[in-house]
Length: 278
Image 1 (cartoon, rainbow, N blue to C red):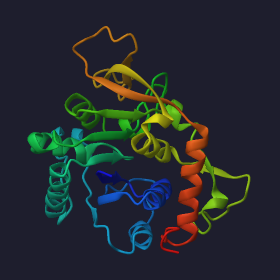
Image 2: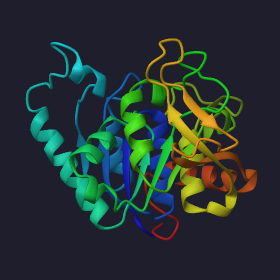
Image 3: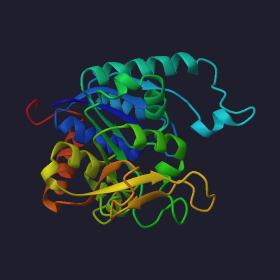
Image 4: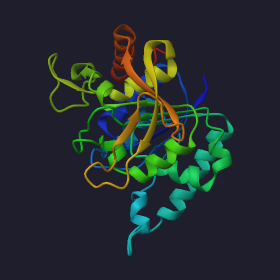
């Protein structure tokens, strides 16, 4: 399997995704974390447990791109310049190997990579993004949270990347899993409580393309109008040929998704040990 560069915020959903990646024996090139509101303090340790400490983990605190163009904004914390340099080196190494980028967070880091090293960025085999929407948003009535968190970055990535697949909000809402499959990850976990696992749907579409129903739309990110800022404007009839044409996952095979979920649950319960290793 091609290498995967996992860009995330370090949330509970990201840990579930890592368990699924471990279950698939994917070639994880690196885990890159951009902390956000949903980040877990124990994410690095949990990620290391799942992979036996074999997968590099890097963290960098970078603000959304817009802040760099605001007077007094865009200032990195002490030491973050070196962290960003290391992260971009990892991005470049992954691209040289033809890796796929799996992003479940805002697209600030991928955008910086596309701006700073466009030739290498073009070598990424796929860019899979958890984000965007076709009909409406969750952070605002029109914008989905991962795009809304840094719309300038999203516009850069969608304008420059090739082989882009987005799992939009409408499909993400279908990707729920039982918390009881992941003991110790939630303060309360019962057979009836569920949690978001949209990234598993994105991963499934990347690993098993036949398990995803796809539509191709022309798309841009709204940056000018304040009420619709961060909206992914989808030209479903593909009339505007000036806009990039990207793939949206509109449905997932329920059986394939369930199998992915249960494999991730088994890996989590076994502490990162696959069935072959047990």
